[in-house]
Image 1: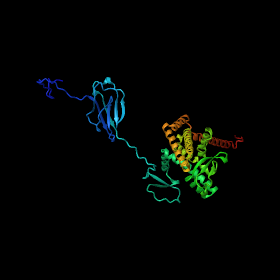
Image 2: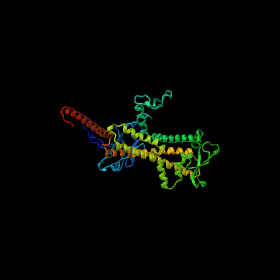
Image 3: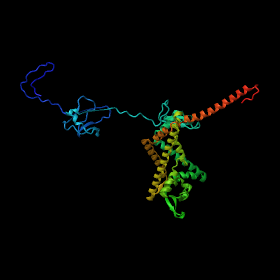
Image 4: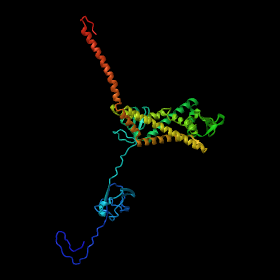
Length: 441
């Protein structure tokens, strides 16, 4: 632009220039970017065109753009966004046919405030309660509990339904807690049964010795005893003369005093892949022995979810699918834990390391909880249980509790009505025939 003419705003008058020198207008040429960071996280925001980065954009929106000095030819290839140094590709190839000036490429970003997750207490209690942290459940009137500042006290038989629902909801939403409770119930039941058995057979002092000498302080190695024909056995370290329960050094694997270790040791010793796998499957059966307690606990969530629905929505096929998947998950968790614990014994045995009983039992519990949690996580991620339930429900949509009850009750009612109608008709017929001299039927 030359300055032959000066235009005065509002006057529309011109004057001839005297110097006739060109006037250069310095307008920055570049790609234009804006940002409005409302996240509250003080983000470092940059744009990049063809690998050329912009300066960090202002945190608050301003009409003035942040520029990447560029030319039309260099406004090409990719458009990228950097958030705290992490690159995000917005456009892999810029449509250069639409770019006639560097300023034709413009971009803006606005971030929103982060919505924090609502606080979720460990146990959600009755909505009418002011306390949301802990509940203490009173077993009976003979148990006198002091007032708790952490939670509320309930009679176990009089707990309101919202509290019971809260317990189930909390456990069903927390796989780790659910697996921990189920595993604890199983192991607690097994240990109680063993203690009671030893008390009846060997006496109370020997039963206490089982907890101390085998569970807490027991250390053993797995051996093959030549005198027993090379059969599997367990050798306990320590002086057997000072013990009340483990009164011998060596025990055959079938001896009742080492039943708590028997399965792990037998599997670790191996008896061919087929036999070992078969034994693991048998031991992992959810309803076998003490496993039944944890199995009932695990399936109780499916039962609860089923019965809290309206009777017309209680689909039997869907319920069967839920129980089937839960059973499979419990069995798989037990199977995996058995294998891992037996593997631990095998590896320690290879290194001729003395094995603490507490390590084996504790590892078995942790393995059961961990494998169960991983299986739940995989199920939740893949939606196996939900998909199975959906397929069965769609395959048998009419197989509901309401329809089944309607069928049986309607049939019974129809039969009852027919019976009563026959009685009425018979009575009316008999009365009508009285004094007629005819026999009524």
